[in-house]
Image (spheres, rainbow, N blue to C red):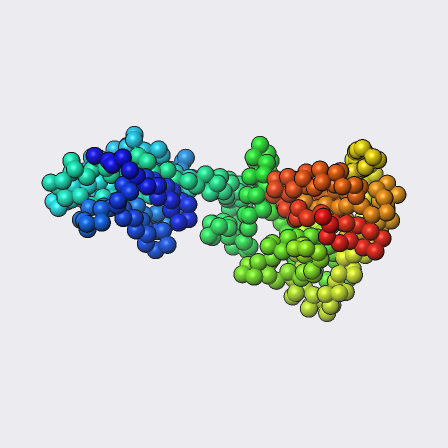
Length: 402
């Protein structure tokens, strides 16, 4: 019988969890690729669970599990393949038929995973050990809902891109999609869908339509005199620029707190980040690039109407939202203080929780504390996060605020 005292095993990467007898051993091999459970005094009794090297949408693979089981287990070693209704997820169970084994095989799918489980049980001891293993498997819970959503989004993007451009022969490449001419990075669209799940279809459609617009043939070879008027500064969190990814080539400049200034060529609704290679072939310095970007930003129009509210003690809030994906960049505008100090006071606060939002508000203690909480909430909900840090704007410039 299953003992009354059990432990909860949590996979080292939180792929799944289950309950097992508290006096049994739990072994982890290959960083969690395989995990085993069994009584300490027996090496011929145990349950092993392995994560198969696939990433799937478990809601659509159920019909394929019998074939996958046949590929995983020799049909001469198992019999009576059937669904196991005791599992928390969809799964199949088969009986071992080898002479020296009285255990079972399982194939279970949930989240974005497929798990293969097997038990070692001497045939003469089936009645003693199998009930405990069935109980353990019934407690198994795959904890990969977030990863399942990411896989479903990736599958949707891949399907739409293959429809639009079958000649690219798009395929998954780790967590990205690779075509013949380029690689598509999915982290932004996944973050955006997770932040606004009700808009999933529209977000994915917009993402794919933007990507599949045929880029100009000279992209990556732009002539400075032709593109200098399209150079813009964009703000990104420091974590966006990773030392081991393509973003490591971006030209960046330190700004404030953990925010960096990056530079892009803005072409309609597309941004192309500028790299060190661009600056070198244009024979520029990073300072010259920055100066051109700031000159272009200063020439950008502000919205004709700005949303705002008035609080107690004449405290005010102004929300800057533009349709060019450069709302947050306007915090760098050289005349920001001159433009907004008449309404907000000699010193005022600014927030840039995400790419498309710039919040300007009065430097009043209770008011700014309330707005700061809202900025943090917007930051956490956004797919294009920048920072929850507030900033103090004075005639002398901008500094981190409190």
